[in-house]
Every structure is written in C-alpha cells, then in structure tokens.
Amino acid sequence: MVRCGKRIRDQQASRTPTLCQARQDGQAAMRQASLTRRLRAPFTRTVTTAVDIDRPVTHVWAVLTDFDGYPQWNPQIRRAEGELVAGRRVKLRMHPPRGRPVTIRPRIILVTPRRELRLRGSLPGIFSGEHGFTLEPTAGGCCTHVTQGETYRGLIVPFIGRAVTAALAGFQAHNAALKQRVETHSPISPSAPMNREMISRRTLARRSSPPSC
Image 1 (spheres, one colour):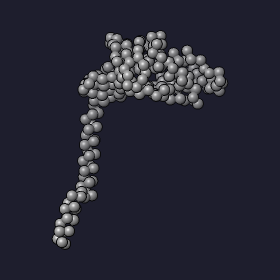
Image 2 (spheres, helix red, strand yellow):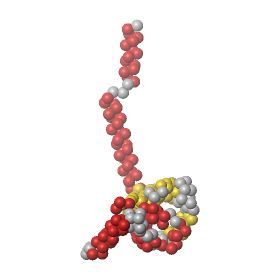
Image 3 (cartoon, helix red, strand yellow):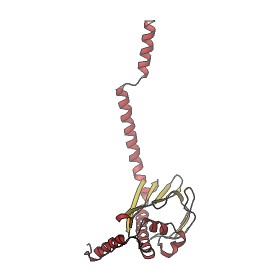
C-alpha cells in the first residue's frame, strides 16, 4: 500500500511542470512573439497627419460625414456614396495627388459620432489599408484637433513607399481643405463669447508671429 501511494505521488510529480520548466516555456513564448513582430514589421506601415480647426467637434463631424457636400470642397474624395453604418461599404471616388482617379469600396468598421470614423479596404491575402479620423475637443470645446491616418499591411507594403508618401500628401491636402470648409461655413456660436475671444487671440498670435524658416 505504501509503495503504491509513493508510485502515484511520483507519477503526479513527473506530470507537474517545475518552476524552471515554466520559466523556460515563458521565455520561449516571448522569443516567438518577438520573432513574429520582427517578421511582420516590414509588412506594416502607418502614416498620420493632424490639423487644428477653430470650431467645435460637432461642426467638424457634420462636414466630415456630409458625403453630399464632398464635391464642393474635398480635393481627395470628389464623390462619396453610402451610409456611415458599421459593417456596410461606401463608394469613394478618389483623386490622389499623383496617378489616375480610382473608385474604391471600403467597409465601415467603426463609427463613433463626433469622435472617430474608421474604414478598411483590402485585396485578400495581399494588402489591406485601414483609414481613420479621430476628433478631439480642445480649448474648452471650441476647437477640434483632427488626426487622420492609415495603416497599411500586406506583402506589398515594402514596395509601395512612393504611393504611401503620395497618400500622406493627399491626407494633408484633405485636412487643409476640411479646416477651410468648416471655418468658412460654420459660424462661431454666439452663446460662447469667451471662446470667440480665445479664437481671436490665437488667430492674432499666428498672424503676428514671424514665419518659421
């Protein structure tokens, strides 16, 4: 009976990993994760650009999501059709700074009103691009910081450096046009005189500051 009990305990101990074994397994998993990240790195690239707009988030969101108004101000997306509903596709007629116009049909993956909009397009197994806009209120809510960017993933990413650079230029042009459109067509709320004063001071400061070299 004693020998039988000892045999059972020995078998259980042999099946229980030691602290050293657990540590080795953890280190192996970390090495594998690090290797995976290094292998994926050349096939992923993210570019971002930002702009500050002297209007509240609600005004910026209204212009950004008004597809019918795009032909009047958007230099990059001349025509847009569809509903901004997560899971659905929209049809965008793109006019990149370089190259011919092209029509794409990305899928809406996230819509958070007055906060965030994200779309994704892909060529299965080869390439995908996830584009996004993030809106953040600043200056007590009277202004908006807009971040626009895209993450490219896929086997062809190492070979599209020029296209990504051109896309970034398009994002910057889009941001500048969005700022002009919102600030020109969205009046400052008369219920916020202090905010108007803050905006005026910021505008005066920008105009009086010497140009940067």
